[in-house]
Length: 449
Image (cartoon, rainbow, N blue to C red; front, side, top):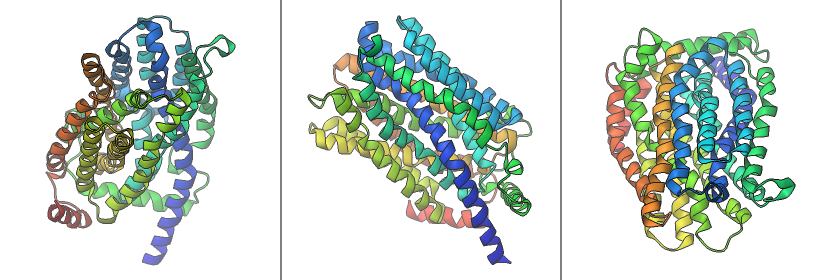
């Protein structure tokens, strides 16, 4: 009986992974390129607008403010109307806004475009995380999230060289290089939106590629997972918006700030830092800036598997934040471009590779609409760091004149995140006993720490 159950488990989850993760990953590649293209456009657009680094980077604050304000409403709407419909809407609107950004001619028009993009894109990432929680039980969820998040480094590996080439099209067809960047990165989102309606089932019960027995097995596995409460954290809030006052959600949200501060701060300034290495064309800057994300891709494959092996998410979260600290310190304090690239690679891996383990923790104590709201709330608060991380670097850069010294701001953020890991663990595992496997893993973590 057990052998049959294991065979069914492998069959159903493998089929779900093959059907869903590559397409969701493609959508995330498009999302990340649309979000990070401004880092390349900055190389020309900042001078064209006639503003300093801090004033230009304020556009990121507008983007993430709109993104944060609308995360929870967007995810609740996704839960109500269906992920396939809502994600298609998100793609269509953010693609149109990105294309329209080619028309900006003033600083305030640029800010308005960034705010509109944040509003359009709000809910995509937490929506996908919630969607995956409806397909993968807790023991498999971290690896599924890690596979999905592989799209982030892929977007930089592919997108950064492409954006460098687009910037070198400056003057073609009467468009500046930065206009080519926004135009070419907005079109794919518009084109792929109709495919979402066709390729994404609303849920497992709507999947034509699962048999009745497979659907029943998956429903039972997910129900059993929810019945265990994931072993982390006690009672679920009685109504959806009560999740916004849940101590575990608030703790996770504040803790998560460390990741977007680090990753978005790095991605936004990476082309500028590499441009300072020497005489490089924009295309060369694009290719060199893709190197750290090759390392990130490897980290997103390896680290979630190591976490799942003994269920040690907190231990690996701390280890990755320590790697981020070391990477930023080396990059900021050592003058050799080669050593600086190694530091940038380490910081990038640390900032990304721990996130699948972190995100797999939330559905351990929240389900249904509460999970949709909770994931969105954590992502909303955390992603404010996506705006203020680059802004913090910009303030240091404007005062010192060096992009490298701005990394000291991200170094401080990573240190605070590392120190906060024990607080996160205490907040999320308090309240109820852990399930047996998790209890053993927790004991292992204590010994390992």
